[in-house]
Length: 294
Image (cartoon, rainbow, N blue to C red; front, top):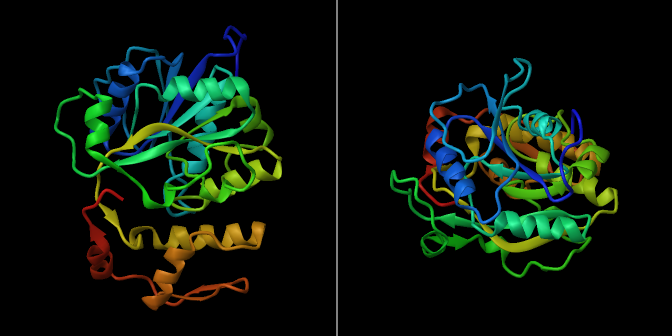
């Protein structure tokens, strides 16, 4: 937090990272406008992107622009999250992926949890199975009917715990600003896609702060995906090496196994051994693209 302290302990900032997907952002803001509890501000960090106009939001918008480093592949997701947190002016931070639409109770549930506990709180992700119409009207019951839970979210404990940090995703989460600062935010050595959110959660665990999965949903807007994510191949390899050097375990093992099956990498999971054999071809990347909810 910067500047003169004028906020109460219940105030919160919504922080959003953006690269493209302007329609997704507009629906996210429509969700903010429809929320039962409104944030004090919305901080938007554009990564290698301009600010589309107009953006309609019923609370103050704060806009930040950052550019990628030419020495690294991928978008500066960690840096963007840290810039957003540093710019926020309230005691509570709620991060939303640009593909997200908050349910009407999400912010109230997050702030209630943060008022009672010092935790890393994650929303329940629900995935919309089809693209939304052009309308910006968002309504919980309709979104619930049009979405599904991710299969890996089934059976997660709802109480605060010290065992679930590896299941943390940065799609929609909340944390006290002081805790975010104490653990150093996201490690900016991670660039591009993959690993940075698990590293953040592991440092939260190292600080003996529990994780809490809440039942209030955040809706993930439909978009095409790559399975495996060959479009982020080098980013994932670089971030996996960095993660292993810090934690002595491999993240994103499913993707690394897929890369190995395709002959793209040589990987020995039991050792610190991950080397690139070849880069995926444009045809392989295109073949991996599917139209799916996740």
